[in-house]
Image (cartoon, rainbow, N blue to C red; front, side, top):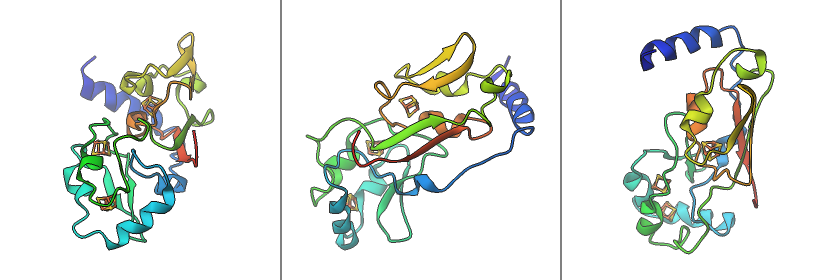
Length: 168
Ligand code: SF4
Ligand code: SF4
Ligand code: SF4
């Protein structure tokens, strides 16, 4: 099935499920940061170059004018550009290659938890971190998940959830 019509079919099916996008994830920060407190330095950062260098255009400013990741349209490729551009060592390359967020699948709104064939999240996951029980009941293996976020925006009913973590 062509990608567009597949997407339309999923959207149609998904409309039977309530979209439950929540805002808990708003403060998931860019990768390569050791201490969340350092983001206070961003308030004084002129030009905020991390935003303009992000190839996926996912770094945005929250209401306090501090960078966070917006994962609705894309995810993080861990390209390192934000860390290389940060002049204040808020983001530094010797930090770990993952984003401090916990991802999960809401079984009430997930199509595949409700007997509808869908693997949009797993198709988007380069880490093979989403496991299906047969072709249904997907779950996320947090041992493999990097928090890249590519599974979030592709889920028709927004059944993929995430929230900020202090540590992995
Ligand atoms: S690593 Fe690259 S894609 Fe990820 S937030 Fe930084 S600039 Fe954007
Ligand atoms: S470049 Fe660094 S200091 Fe500036 S806004 Fe981005 S993360 Fe903060
Ligand atoms: S399950 Fe984790 S690694 Fe896979 S796409 Fe989602 S956030 Fe990325």
